[in-house]
Image (cartoon, rainbow, N blue to C red; front, side, top):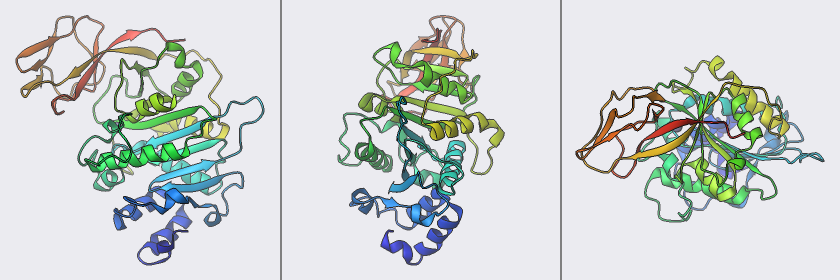
Length: 371
Ligand SMILES: [Zn+2]
């Protein structure tokens, strides 16, 4: 155990953690008391903190270790003969106010620590932006989910709180990536904007369509997703990072609407919760092939803000996946007007408040399922 956790004021919330198994609450308390502690030399990196002795109900098959603030590694039984096995990475709360996935994963961690769920294989759990969660905000200085450039060194000078946190997440992956197992990374979010399809995934660009395996798409479909966006190029999102650097089966998953902590209707997220638990308990992707009514879209253009005078020519509260007629003007950027090319095209993530050079939205067009 880290020594100072035995002392006031840490001892009271550490004791509460051992009773409730609420790792998120513990991490937020630790962050509030000592936000600086983990910035420089982190004792956990040299020696992760094994939690099992404090949670006697936790299955003897599972080893649960805190590897950094808000980050856990859970090791379960190795793959059986004939199983490929997976290293599963679940990240939540990269945007601090997107509470539903944070609550789901917090509950799953508690179930593991209290012995109600037994995990197979290897799992990394990342609670993303702790400071933004405390502040009940999406972000503090910049968008954490745009801080995962693959070329940036994890020890490079930190330009923002978010980049510092992204570096810690990258470092945890570097230290705990098991190269013998395929990586499956689900980065779970919820959205502020209404959406014609509230539950959807953004899939990072792959070298070939075959890289989006049927079993991976089925896993996402079983979470209740209604649509998939296939990206058209490199980005600086967390899921693109794990896809590009670790050949991960990775996705940014939007599970529904943003609500405050405690205000989520858990019925809305049941399918996602069940599939995540199934994935952790079996360490296998599903092999069923039930026909489902899921839509696939290609990202065909990324709208980037180029100038000072930038605006959309539609209402800013337009839902994601809204359609326009061909030739409809949708955006004005320093006097240049951009139009929709065809009747099939839809807009996703429109945001005129981005900085110059940043993404202001995506234009997507329907396509066939890859398999
Ligand atoms: Zn988000």
